[in-house]
Image (cartoon, rainbow, N blue to C red; front, side):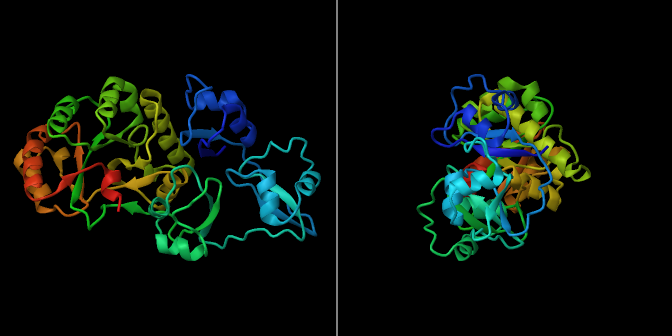
Length: 367
């Protein structure tokens, strides 16, 4: 069964969300490890496993509509030009409050059903969305989204509003941040041991730097105290898959499982989820990019591989990073590399001297 990502809206309760998706409240509580199901907040990300059924053929003289996240019968009726009562009767709906995304509804022939051409998706605006963020996530541009949605006000996006997003290609990997911004991001991949984590955290704290840490699910489970320390220090947390698997060798369902299990492991420790994903070994294909995007993630690669994982010595690490430095650079490092704590202070000093600021990946991406 497919797993979808739902962002809590103002006024939501776990019971309401479960009813909306046709699942039980307990399944949402268990899947997201909610300690207090009465306390959820707008913008919070929840994973929901929804049922998947083959839609029946459309009867002659009728039209079909696929329910989108955030839809109600009232908004569907208003958007398609029919009445709620007609939808209820045609679909024999006993509870008008119980519809779920992906559900196929029958509509009268006169209904105006939004058509989404191939290579585009119909997207429902969620809390915190911006056109820039959506363009980044789906590998398109703000200008392309504006062209596809004449009259849209990019400064006044409404939760529940539906827009068309051009998706050709469906999703892309990000290798560099804003090239006009004199800022770089240190990133640290954590997969197995505790290694140099405390030393790296001390160096970053002493220099007032926030970095992005890509955490595997097994690392979150084995070193919860270190993950909390990273999070409490204000660093950004990214998803590095559950077991650091070779993702391109997996099926789409297995890819989805790797990402969602890591998300659950991270969320269980720090109470929040990541929005950035880095594929283990830097291996990806279009299927993985699409799966990550469907789960609400941006796939983050790197501008500069420090090669610290090869243990070349601190001088070689420093030289490689500085020789490839540029605006918006995302620098790949590892918490398990023994030479990295020795190289990091000198790197920070020289990068600062060259006039760069330091930020998380999200800050480096921001225009």
